[in-house]
Image (cartoon, rainbow, N blue to C red; front, top):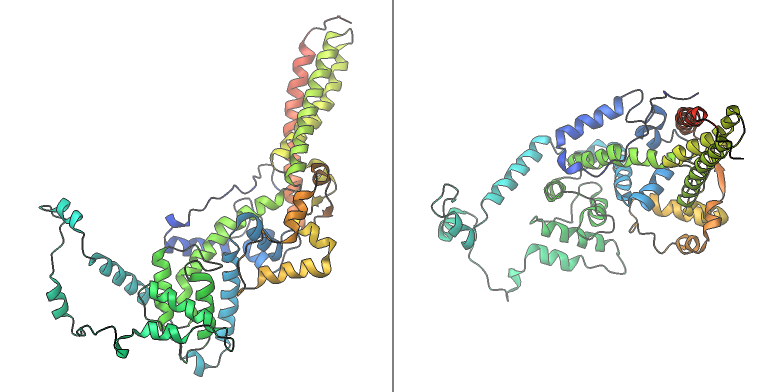
Length: 449
């Protein structure tokens, strides 16, 4: 069984989440989760929700998706954060009501009010002398307010203290000194880094609270939100500041609403289509280049055979033999153009990925270590340059890479997509072959030999 002959594989999606606002992301996420039928060249059997829920077979499982994000797209932090959030929501809802009430829900109205406050504060930033000189006499000059007026209008303003007194130490500075990592409590290092993230956002960090999961939230901030964190999410400064402000007030999962929308949108509309497109390719790059060479060779062989037969004393019917080279060459070239090796497809096989290749050789350690590292939502950086398979794979010669180990494709939906692409390639090859052979048959014979 194959899909429609008009099927097109998912196009490559570049990063463009900055141009999509929050409402559009919410609608697109809801529409993607509720849609049925073929969407963007992805069947329902390979949908994002199906993969995340574990309803697919290799090479389209959640682990394969994670490996793709780690080694190919370099954005595994999105899926790791998404999986953590799903688990966090589940654990938070399982808390007793007496504990859940300590972390109030963060509403949309509060988030919008915070955004408007940030814009107001940004508008009140003093203008530089150069900018004021340029805009002098125009309608864009903001009303000037003296520092004396600002201080007098602030009811909470207090005279500055001398920095040498003990009482002059800022609350954040004293808290940061108390949160230095120690051997007895290494978790304080996460709190210290979280405090630094709040300080950069001009927010007051309160590390000691009775709200549930406060220490875990500090770890999440240190790993995913703080600058130069090991798994820093690709968020705008506005999204990051808004989330940090929400986390100063509550640990309720609703505080992550806007950020999780950005992360999920990126996963559904960028990473997932690119993953399916990449998974359709059943061979590694050396094998695909080799297949392209075979395709070009087959086409050249068909042309040479047709020319020789045309120039000989043989009848016109013998020129049809050149169709064999044309058909095989064009079909192979079209499949290779779409990242597939037609020989591997005939067996429904695929090459093992480099990280799978060496994990299979030492399954007792490599495979388990890989799984633990990538699925540890509170782990370290996703860098893989120091993993043993990188150096080992670089040492392999090109011939071994072309004929690397193969494995059967277990996912039926992926096999159907590949069958459809192969059938399209054969159809295109038949048309090109018929036209090419027809041209040579119409030419009078040369009788040169």
